[in-house]
Image (cartoon, rainbow over all chains, first blue to last red; front, side, top):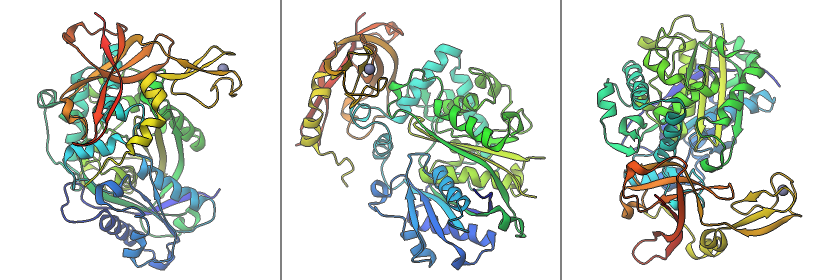
Length: 387
Length: 138
Ligand SMILES: [Zn+2]
């Protein structure tokens, strides 16, 4: 396999974006990424689009060809990638694999979702379809409900409490203040988070990521080519994917996700790196408890220690490991298919000194963890500075 | 807009034994239970020793939550308890927890029994879908 790099990124504003389709959003993000990469349109060999459900949200199946259509790139391959909330991360990974294989020289990986057309209960239903339809969904599961059970199991075993979960929300909202593309630029307090509306006991509204529209894109090329390009760049150190049972109840332990443990370990092995080499990480905080579990599963903290570490400030700027400097799903927003791509966009901006007010100092390695379903799919990436 | 596009009759007939009678399978070789029914024993990697097995309607409560914000289609139920139950044979299922009169008395590992109830209906004229829900045994 060839070494691979990323040479341009694009991202729309995340939020409630009104009269626009996911196809237009993906096109906007892709154009921005291609412009930054300074590549000619005719150089693009293929497109991957991570998207959960244009079918349900926009009454559009077969969405992938719509993107090259709007980009004026008809006739190149364009593929929809769906892996629940990990669709975006997987689209990037498919793009990386296709360039690494030697098949393509320039690939645009995009992620997009237009969710706010539907009322909340319909969105909740659509998202629930990412769980096991027969043995979970038809019995009334929701994703807040599934993660509520993870939170309870974690609290019983390790004492991770509501204040620790709220500290994740407070921290990510604080980070989001400095991300102009985030859905929210609004600080919240621990008290406000803990006393907000109960969604699925013990998770409150502020434990949950919002419903969001948005898109993100990256341009992927062989590293040999990237090295010769003048613009910003980063090298793909490694990637890994893992899957587990569809149903949460079929796992022996729900205080963590085996998929994150496996994918992270493989990513570290392939990159020949240790967890202590990573300078910052973007993890999938669809719920506050998911961030804590991810940090433990990747190995930044021992099992049961991420909650108190978050309260102590270990996961913010200047801490032991800055987590979700972009604002995370919590504050940046969670347009399902775009989320995993936007994590990669954040790592790119940080590694190239393009992150504005939220720029971290002296960062060499950044990692992403993108989760689908109740952890049934996990995609991890590690990237390194390109200069 | 129609979101839920379940093929009701077909789906329910296909799931008749699992959903209506809690039938899975048992492997005579490794003495393991499977639910839902598997095509081969996941341990022995063969279908040779599998036989149908109807699970007992008793188990213990492993985890629960109260869902205040149900998905479309379950909004009729209002807030409801949702749980993971480990059946006596060791397999786990998720379902709703009914007749919780005193939430404070819900305990990890407490005994529950399964009862046959309506899961959901489809619109005003849709079929009812039935299945098992759990009830705490205080
Ligand atoms: Zn067996």
